[in-house]
Amino acid sequence: MRSLSVAVACAALAVAGCGAGYKVEFQNDNSITYWYDPARQSMGSVQGLAQEHCARTGRDALPQASTGDRFSGISMSFVCRPRP
Image (cartoon, rainbow, N blue to C red; front, side, top):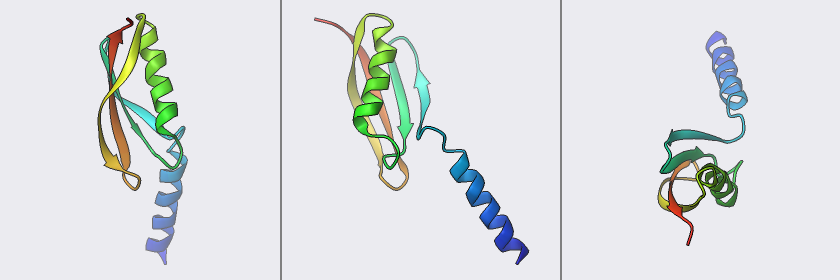
């Protein structure tokens, strides 16, 4: 019974720790990579976050790579390109 209580407590902490459903994995002035939970965030909302990051230097965010799935989460990278 005690192991079941520990498992339930750990699961509750994991859910509570999810926050906004995304986190920054890497960032610099030229790019940014997010991990996100597609059940809590859409690709469009993550694109918007990347655009905000790149706009700080007057550039646009362009998707570069994506790995993962809807069960484990998705890691998506964006590169900051100069505006035309």
